[in-house]
Structure formats: structure tokens, C-alpha cells
Length: 158
Image (cartoon, rainbow, N blue to C red; front, side, top):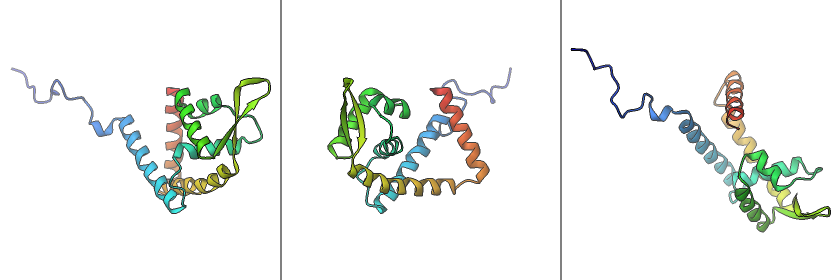
């Protein structure tokens, strides 16, 4: 007779579910979004989604070059249909405008409006506050290692 006390039961995975990397990344992501929302409330921009923040920031930093929907899709690794919905809402809120391009009527250049610029400044404050808060939870070396590992994962998954 052999000892089976060290064997795993047939239906229990060999890892603890809370330690599965995607689940932990998702949990941390959710907690970071909560912190962003807290700072948004404090800065009176709590009606702006984090994705709107990031798109406005991208448009702000690329204001001297043409930016199109496909650039947003690539930059944020999101699908065309999702970007279409996001941009339509941002346009209705007055954050962006879509301008036709003379050489191709199908292309629409994305432009940050004055209102979008004002909201961008306030949301950037919230993002900087969040970044400082999160970075403060780790040492400088831990932050560097975390960023290195996250970039490695991102590149491997793209």
C-alpha cells in the first residue's frame, strides 16, 4: 500500500486562485482605479473616466501631429468598436472634435477642445497624485523592478 496523503485531489488546481497572476493584476488594477476616482472627486472631475483621461492626455502630448482613431487603438491596445464608442461619447461631452482630412474624407483627425484641455489639466493632477501614492507603497528598487516586469509581460502578450 502506498501513501496518497501528499497527492493533490483531482479537481483542485496546483495553485491558490488568489495568487494567479492575471487575477492579482486585475485586483490591483481595480484598486488603482478606485484611488484615481478618489482623487478625481477631490479635484472635481469625477465624471471623467480613466480612459477619457488617457486619451485626452495622448491628444494633448501629440497636438502638433495628426492623431486618428487607429492611433488610439494601437496606443491603448483596444478594439476599433470600443474606441469608436469612447470617442463618440468624448465628442458629445465636448472633450474632442473630429475634423475631416482633405486628402481622405473617411479619415477624421482627433483634436482636443478647449474644454478637453481644461479637463485634461485636472485629470492629470489626479493621475499624478495616484502615481505618487502607488509609487510610495514600494521602494525605488521595487518600483523599477515592477515596471520592468510589467513591460516584459505587456511585450510578451502583444
